[in-house]
Image 1 (cartoon, rainbow, N blue to C red):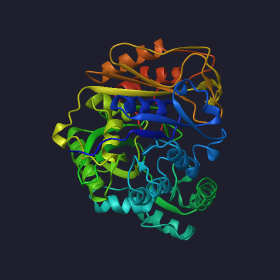
Image 2: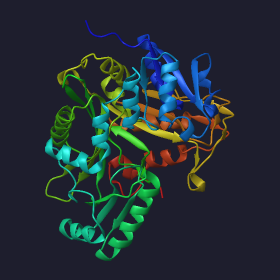
Image 3: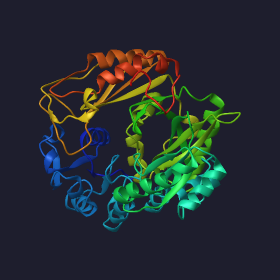
Image 4: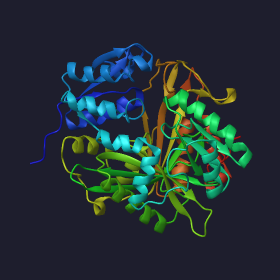
Length: 451
């Protein structure tokens, strides 16, 4: 008989993330306990729920305070903790402290998160596991001269990147040898400020590529599967705007080979739970190649796209695997049908350089209908706080094919009513209606239909 699920689970996150995890908890008979900051204490999703206040509004004193989060789990008698995505979700110390205090961490073992948190070590591990990687330095750059030597070997343009970190910080492009020195020092300074370390590595800059990610899932018994890929090429400052599956940029053969290799790589490194391999489509050679960039050791914001194509609840699978149960599916059990699309809608003002727009939502009417899913924590009267990410909702649509999913998304966004704060809906509609997006004639260099 498989191990039982948890009775009580602490959700160490906020907003749409907390609502999403709690929905599955209730469906499985698990009591969700919300860990919140003082700014979120009266958020609509906390009404009538068990709540633990972590601390002040500042993330560093609440959602990012590892000891407070673990203490909240222990004091609220939770036997498990789900970190969601963002905040502490990829912090190996959180998993370690959970284990020390008898709390099951819903995620991979800390040693795996540590391995994947080092971009260089991750690339080595994935290369050894059979995935293609982006050509570049074999380790941390020693100095500017070392960067010049590696750049001369792989060819310009090149990208200097922080060895730890992400989110587009600690990255600089050098198109010619005379740009290496300034790019090196600028990237190093930003990395030091953002991540507390200034180690850099160098990669060949893949120009005109597509950003593709593969959803993998593994249990503690060495079994791993993939759940297809998602395309995240439409981005603004390295932040994803639209995600879809299947990717319009790759063919069936490349998809099958790379997805199988990603699942095998996850098993090889001892991964447990939900994870995402981030890859870049390199079209520079005679045949396109998907090259590994990094692995996100958590569930992604856009996991809902995969859920719509597979009909599976990935949060439920996370909880079962964390409880010690084997993966509920074999690779042959996973069937992906149709096309799914997701738009992230933020409280930002596109006309003012996408400046975040905190404030009170005076009217909120989400779209509804066949093929439409909305994941949100917002309702009329909700106050968008200035302290956190300004995501209001994710609108997910599905259709028999890509054109149908796009048409349904346009209809859904036209239905969405949000008064009181500006949103990014106009930008998303411009993208979706553009010829470039509809035909797939775009890459990571520009947003189709915008700017």
